[in-house]
Length: 143
Image (cartoon, rainbow, N blue to C red):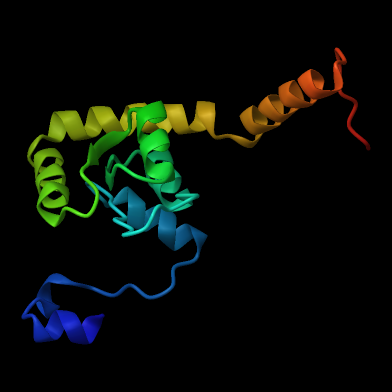
């Protein structure tokens, strides 16, 4: 990738950070204005997007795969047309230019990720499904 960027005359626009540990990742995200991970395929998980939004960083994502639901549920960014580099660049530029909107989306995203994607929330949803499937009022966890 670095060779391709150099060949395209964009080497100065890119900094490879290497592999980041958890603390370095948190610090990296704290300095970001906007985050995007424009996968060309329908990403089934999108954990990076959740991490970014949890850090208060709004995202700009292609509207496909898990990204669509995550951005819609959290209100944490913009969805753009998939496989459209111009639409992606325009979405990033919109948020980059509008600091107030960017900060508001980031704050909203952080709260919603914690509310909707926490371990506690996931456990409560699983418990509700198990109650429905088993027809019982309470599910007892093995200890």
